[in-house]
Length: 491
Image (tube, rainbow, N blue to C red):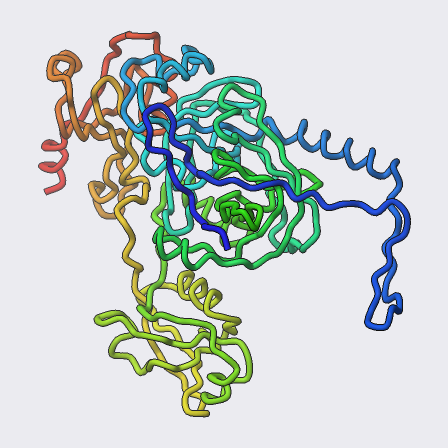
């Protein structure tokens, strides 16, 4: 097996956000009749011939899909250090060459994303943006926009970005109730090796090789959950990560995420996060800057063997408990090592991956009933999932940041509002690097900026849009509120 990873090139100048390589495995088409034979040489089925005319029509279909969906796909460029100057934050002052000049002075990462909302919201992988100080996207028609992170979920490897634009073309997400099947066509469009950083997204074609794939080693190494993935032969190169995987109807069926690197004995194999109801819910939460919360029990589970099922009395499926973490929600419950869990709150557990996903979606701090088999007896065990400890990398409304003219700004903490009142509007001054500018603008660390140049600022997204429209190097008037005065008023 090849290595599965998304490595970064740490050299100055360019770092690839998903350093992956996959060779396109294009299925061959038989020109006449093909027969398959069972033992003894007896024909068991017949594959209908595909005419040259059909292939020409398929070629035209690929081109039509690319032309229709490419405008909804963006190339993502990220700087690992801040870029000074208003020009880097204003779309009217940017083009691909100007952006390249900025990024040539720093370490950059590249990736792909796609529009999920006409107001400029973009979905991508969290690992594309997790080390970024500043972000930009380039559209298929060569327009460049500054971007900010609205929300991210490291465990699911998803992030939502925002650009100061509206009326953008949106990628259509496939119906999650229509299952993806092995053998159907797939189209990957994105930014391989950063080649689309100047516009015109690149396209590759393949098929669905398999569904419900898991990458446990990569999950453990990266602290993420890579399960229930689509495996595809569509070529996924470094820089494609976070981009869409389309079907032949031009609908997004997955988010390109990982690959097994090619070895001498095998081509690369690409994987995509499928479009499911859970993904759609994640998108809405991330767009709102909400924290993604996962249920946690503290058990290590594996798929039981037939012998282990027989010993416990379980018929099929299930997840076997290998170990219970000390001081976890499961510790102190009636769960035991070697138990085979077959249902959670009445929902059947197909395997260990399914159990992890079910617990992750469970409501925290509310008892869950686990149906387990132990010593050929069926036992119900009540255990209360708690909030899964997450790394401090996740971005939500509380941790959104935008750096402008040496001022680091964030959303106003929600807990500053009085009980029963709506959340406070404005942006909060987290840090100041230029004391003279701060004095001139009459702001200080802890100030809340309510408006800029007469425009109300409700949050970071509003601030981004206002900055994008200001004249270069203009010094606008700020309306502020002092946090000390707010604290006094709340007492």
